[in-house]
Amino acid sequence: MISGRCAACKYLRRRCPSDCIFSPYFPSNVPQRFACVHRIYGASNVAKMLQQLPAHLRAEAANSLYYEAQSRTQDPVYGCVGVISLLHQQIHSVESQLAKTEAEIAVLNSLAQEPAAQIQENEVEATFNNFLLEQDIIASRRFSHPTYISSNII
Image (cartoon, rainbow, N blue to C red; front, side, top):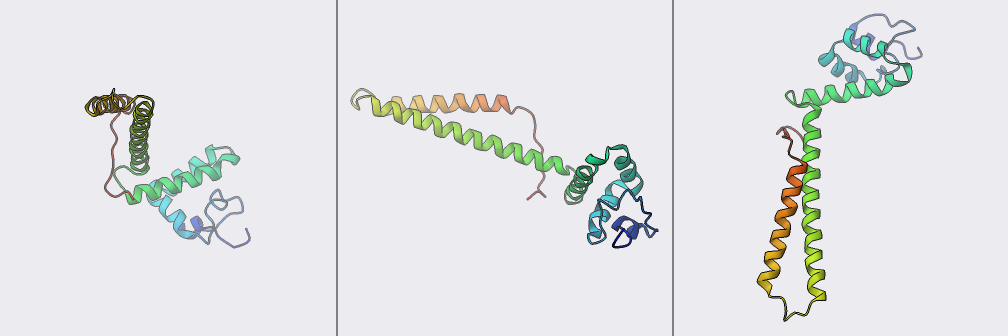
């Protein structure tokens, strides 16, 4: 290894062997990366996980372990699941806004095609509100699973 011991071996205060499982994924110039992963998973468990994977998947696994450990440190209850739930909630909100906007466009298009004397304003508003209610029901059925949002996220 060119730069001496890897971050894991420095953190664990041991000699870094030439075939160290940690050295490609925890370089010595980023010591907090291994410290965070070690705090959550432990060095032995991380080594076992990396050794069980094919070599081409280990880098992605190390990145994933680091992200999950960082998330768990920031939000001990939900970890990265809290972020995923927040993103699902944002998707649901945007889809709902999109459905409402599409409904408004459809109503306005139908108004532009009909003579103004034939359609009363109250009927249009009632039709529009019914359509919005139907869209909210459809959207709520699609996202009926509970989401858990942590107050520590973002």
